Length: 218
Ligand SMILES: CC(C)(COP(=O)(O)OP(=O)(O)OC[C@H]1O[C@@H](n2cnc3c(N)ncnc32)[C@H](O)[C@@H]1OP(=O)(O)O)[C@@H](O)C(=O)NCCC(=O)NCCS
Image (tube, rainbow, N blue to C red):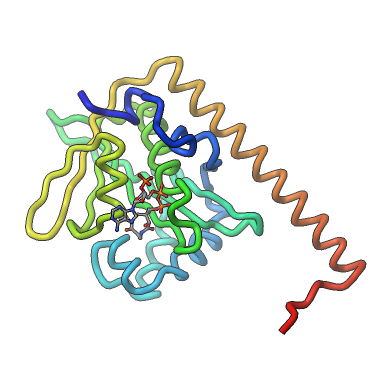
């Protein structure tokens, strides 16, 4: 089966290994930053992300209702510790006779796109899914969402189209020691990256306090 994320094939681009782009698991303390991220998406990106027109109030409600105990939320931070990319892995209710599934939704701010962040979030969600006994990873998106379709197909997902919508499925093999180690390594790397950015940000702020913040030449 052609299933790159599931079988851990080495990708052609180094960032696709999910090692270069650090991805952190988020918690309830990140709610404000998640809201900020989603509100920065323009009308078209919101339509692509949620499948419909999504005003601010709907996003606020969505963020308020995120259940971090039930679902998993992942993020990629920039040097200012703003969320440049985030993914929501929603565990779907168990249906008798069907495999346990989770739905993946993702967004990356325009200035962060094309740098492997979406790919890294999908890779992290896939390995987390395997480690939490998810057998099918599911993405629902508009069929004209070329970037998401490309990401899904690159990950070896099977795509089915109907009425302008596309459903992509990735059948996941069970977890094994390698997937447990991979997730632990990803977590450590992302924590290290975050701590580094936090220290840099603090020391920059200290210098700015001391020397005065640089102003942009007009
Ligand atoms: C889809 C999205 C998450 C991708 O994020 P990203 O960080 O740019 O993703 P990556 O950089 O990892 O990869 C993007 C890939 O799509 C490709 N791509 C981008 N636009 C494309 C297009 N119009 N047609 C085909 N491929 C496209 C890029 O070339 C890249 O492929 P490559 O890695 O083989 O070179 C981002 O575009 C986004 O947030 N879109 C709005 C919300 C959305 O559509 N969410 C998905 C629905 S849940």
